[in-house]
Image (cartoon, rainbow, N blue to C red; front, side, top):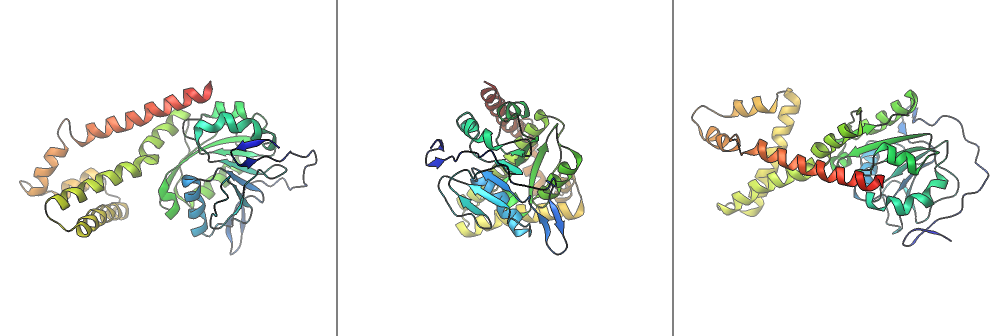
Amino acid sequence: MRTLLPGFPVRAVGRKKPQRSYRRSIDRHAGRGLMLPRTSWFVGCGNMGGAMVEGWRKAGVDLSGMTAVSPSGRAIAGVKVVTSIPESEPDWCFLGFKPQMIDAIAPDLEPHVGSDTVLLSILAGVELDSLRAKFPRARSVVRLMPNLPVSEGEGVTALLSNDTDDATRDAIQALHEKLGFAPWCKSDDELVLISAIAGSGPAYVARFVDAFAIVGRELGLAPDVADKLALETIAGTGLMARKSGERMGDLAARVASPGGTTEAGLKVLDADDGVVAMVREVVAAARRRSDEMAAAARD
């Protein structure tokens, strides 16, 4: 028996295909909301894949057709978990393992990705052409770039495909809108840019919030108070901006009274080497790393 990952056996694909209806898009049933295709796999359902599943579960999406394929066998709420690739071929196959592992995994997974399978990849840096080269028989290939807040239905998932029909495209968007904002991209480059801002963004925002908490503790606030103040300040600001539709720059100006304490702090952030310059460097570093990963996947 071949091995897909350590402890991850692969069963042979039989010649006989099960009889399935042509309908591959997500079904809508009265009172049941959205339903994943009847046979869907999530190969390598780690932190990000688990966040997506959790978001769908909380949104009431019917996950009865989902199987997570994980060598550890770790339980994932709402879906069946197996440690080996099932027989036959799925309607939809999500790729959620580490992108550096694609060359090791693709040769054993490819026989299971046939002409009826929609391949959906959350592998950072692995472009459409690279995915198509490794899974040439797939009916269509889709890139997804979610961020972790999808677990609460408050995330961002960038979508990209150049060979998906309208019905499947609509189904993919309907499913991922259950997780938050789900814009379609025009190119791999645009998807990388969205990922550098939104995909990685929760980590950067968390560091910025933590910096406020650290300074609060340094200045004498109790640790739990400092942490709560920082978190509630950013949560409340985001909620206020979302409800009002106000641009963040305008909101900042509205908080700052001329000659006041807020304006004094903003002058530090607005300096030539302030927060905008820092964010440019942060996003540029993320994009460079994505380009490096894309180049490695092409080789």
